[in-house]
Amino acid sequence: MGSAPYPASEWKGKGRGSLQELGCMPWKVSKQKGGGGSGGGGGGEAVVGTEEKRCRDPRETQQQQQDLSSSSSSLTSPAPPQAPLVPPAIYHEKQRRELCALHALNNVFQDGTAFSRDTLQEIYQRLSPSTMVTPHKKSVLGNGNYDVNVIMAALQTRGFEAVWWDKRRDVGNIELSNVEGFILNVPSNLRWGPLRLPLKRQHWIGVREVGGVYYNLDSKLRSPQPIGNPDELRKFLHQQLRGKNCELLLVVSEEVEAHQTWRSDG
Image (cartoon, rainbow, N blue to C red):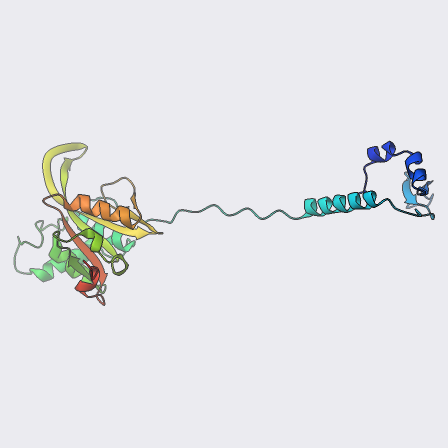
């Protein structure tokens, strides 16, 4: 698709006198009628005659080059639009019965099939096979309320360890690159259906990084709550550990030693 160096309106503005003053002869343009054959159309089209201009105005040549450059730019294909950023899919297991330990584990691993209630119940029975009420689990009906011993044993079945974080240490010294996720034991209000009772019980929550952002995956939340970057994560952990009844477990691969979970300068 080409374009004429000058629009028709500009050609009308240029009189013959200006061309003759430059000693140039204008192009001869003749009308050629369409042929009368069966494939011919009824309209005519303009064709350039045999005589050419004897000379060309330098200003005219420069203007034509600019017009051609503009025409080429307009024909350049636009850059394809960038695909919108799709937020990462986050697995968030909601609270059922007293299975917060189960939910925290699955949320940290981002896998609803990582652990099951039967798996944790089997671990509990293995830890204390001959007792009905033990410090490992207060509910003997398999409804949950598992303690840290069950969580630690469950992690070991998948090649991970739970490293207890000494609250006397600064959380700024945690070596995040060696930590898969975090499990916190925090006090939480007891509910009876929609009612919030004036009682508190210990509750397990999971925290981990997904797509470069750390999330609070508390099973009692309606949806994952973004915490932010590593600095914002440390602030979150610091605020949680200020509570008297809060404990922090670092979930790490069994190949990582306990001393590798904090910086050497800490």
